Length: 189
Image 1 (cartoon, rainbow, N blue to C red):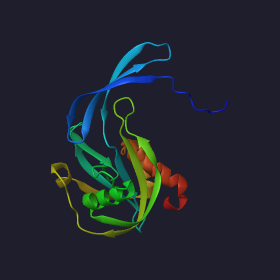
Image 2 (tube, helix red, strand yellow):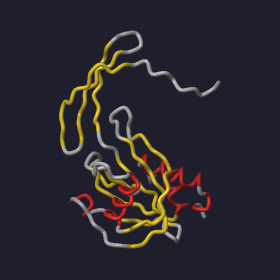
Image 3 (cartoon, rainbow, N blue to C red):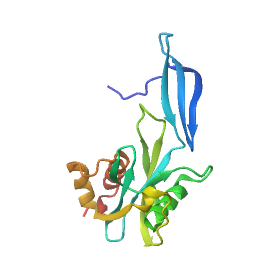
């Protein structure tokens, strides 16, 4: 059986803004299904985000432990940030966010892919990059979560084990680290 794309026969008839805040919007979409019945769905709309699988010259992955209010807990993840500067190239945003969150700057940037954050709840996607040739710089935190953030360096092979054993459960982090390992086996020492 060939994996052919499914033709989208759902038609949006209207989209309403229910609420807006910061760079987010809660939208209500009215959709006509293939049988002609109309239904509605709500979701959060965002400009999207970027993330970096930052690998040091020693082969360590740069991770951050950051407080996330949605879970009322610290979450271990790769450095990431919102695409909050209109018109900025996502790769530039990724390197800027890495610098702000960890102090590391990167000279080598490679697109790994795009991960859908939670397609049943939001239209947000995360563009993930592999960044290497890092230099240490100044940490530039923005907001209380970043002020309390901790940067952790983990050997690449250990980051893979952390995904497997459940110590690293963030989707964009697993996606990025696994893609980087698949495309660049040299990273797994």
